[in-house]
Amino acid sequence: MARETNKEGIWISLFEEQHSRLSAVAEMLLNRNVSPKHILEIALGDLDGRPFPTAFGLVSATRAVVKAAIAYNHRNTDSRVDVASSEPVINVYSGPLPLEALPWAERAVYFLRDVLQYSRRDTALLLGMSDAEVDQLNRFAGKRLGVQAVPVE
Image (tube, rainbow, N blue to C red; front, top):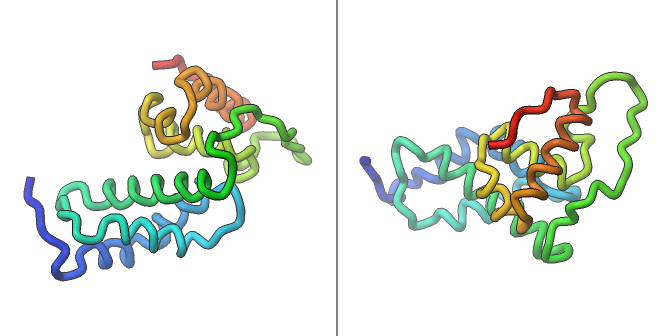
C-alpha cells in the first residue's frame, strides 16, 4: 500500500474536503451539544505526523473522529456508556423516528454498526460495553427506527 507523509498537509486537506461528512460523524456520536469543530481538531491532531494511507485516508480520518468523539464523551461523563434506554422517546407522529431522536447509547451503537458498518466487537470495545449490550441496543434502535430485525452476526 502506498503511503505518503503529512509534509504537505495531506490530512488537513482531507479534513477540509470531507468537513461536512466528518462533522456529521462527530455530531452523531456526541452525547451533548458540543461543536464538532472541536472534535475534528482533536482527531486531526491525533493523525498529525502519522503516515497517510492513500487508499484508506477517509476511513482513517473517520475512525479518528469516531475515537475522538467517544473519548470526549467518556471524559465528560461517567467512564462507561449508559446502556439502558432510560429515557423514553416520545414519538409525536406515527412512523419511524429519525436517528438523531434516539437516546444516545442506541444512536451511537446503531450509527457505528449499521451506518459505518463497524463489527459488533469493535463497537463494543469503542463504547466500553459487552457484545450482548451492543446487540440489545441495536435491536432497540432498529425498533424505534422502524427497521426490520437482522440476524446477529
